[in-house]
Structure formats: structure tokens, C-alpha cells
Image (cartoon, rainbow, N blue to C red):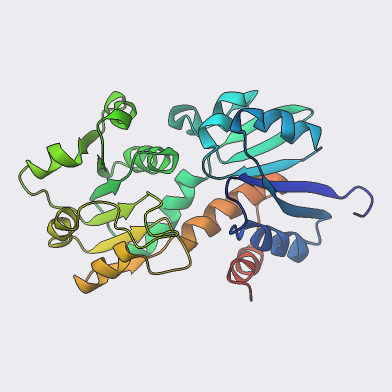
Length: 270
């Protein structure tokens, strides 16, 4: 490691599959910024702040399953992350750990290409779902959350977001949505759908778009959406844009389109 080189990292479990290092390092290279970004496999999420500081990291991204731990361990949480209760970015500010959530704005940027979206059905209730739901709510886009069980829906209900378990949703009149979003990990390392096929096919009847937070593959969810003539998009743009926003926190500067393109190429391994 060269002198004064800043160290950045992504924490996750698993983390081997992450493409964040190739994306962030491409950005550093483009800017000629003296930094290196690596993977850090972290088993115990509750030790995240301690591990971050002990290793002398200047900044970090946090992926599943540590986003909630990262939130509760931070010295200060800024922006929408305070409501989301999950963070995906750490910055070392003079020994204090400052936390942000760039998933929320990253998601909004990623769905811009669909055009106008008025009503969204969001599948899942984890940290990513919280970020997406609140980002949509802040943008005055109507969002319903659908999760297998009732247990995790308390958060959304407290924020005034309509939410259903599979059972309560099935007994409802068919709602009409423009966009269906999968925020669960179904399809990441398996061939599962995020919920009952029947629920999805009903929702797809009137929807125009389907978005999956999983990136780099056509998941069973997206394949089914495509069969039902929906315009589909995987999570690559969300990953890119949340990464660009984190990169701006890391480097303390707004970046140009050149850097964004370099990061996109890095993400694609080009």
C-alpha cells in the first residue's frame, strides 16, 4: 500500500460476490484518487463500528445482513437513514463514525428510466425495502409493502405505509400497480420467486414495470414479469447510483459523468 493511501471497504456476509470493489476502484483510478477499496467478510454485525475504526478505514459500504447493526452502532446518522433505521455507508470523520443510506436515492435514480410511476407494490420488508418505501413516500409515490409474514410490517405501519402479509393480500380486491419491486434475496442464489406465483401474476396483469434489486441476472421474478409483457430492470443501476453517492461521500466531492461511466464499466468488469 502506498503512503497516505486511504482504505475503503465493503462489509457483508457473504461478501465474496460483491462487485462494489471493482466499481469503486474504477472511480478512484479515473479521479487519480489515492485509495484502495476491498472486501471485508464480517460475521458479527454488532462489531462493525469497532472493526471499521480498528482497521483505519476512511469509509465503508455495508451490505446484508449488517445494515441495521451499522445503523445502531454509528456515532451519528444523517439524512433519510434516520427514519430508515438501516445504513449502507460509513464515513470516518475525525474518529467519529457518520452513517448514511444511499440505497434510497440510488433506487429513485434507477427507476427514472421507467418514466412516470404512481403506484408501487414492494415485495419484502428488510433494510432495502425500508429504504425504498421511504424514498417513494418522500417522492409522493404511493407504495404498498407485501411480506410473507406480519412480523416485520410494524415499521411500515408506523410510517403510514399500507402493508400486507401474503394472507391478508390474497383476500383483498385486486389492486392496480404501475411498478412491482422485488427487494428480497429470492433469485440471488436460487430459483425461487419472492412470493406466490398467483399473487405475482395477478399484480402483473395491470403493471407496466418490474424491478429487481438483485443484479447481474434475470431472476425468476424478472423472467415471469417478462413473460407477462412488463418492461424489466435488474438492480445494476441501483447498485451503480448508490455506489456513486457513497463515492462522493468517500472523496468529499461531486463527480462528473466521466467518473460515473468509469464506475459503470468497473461494475460490468469491462
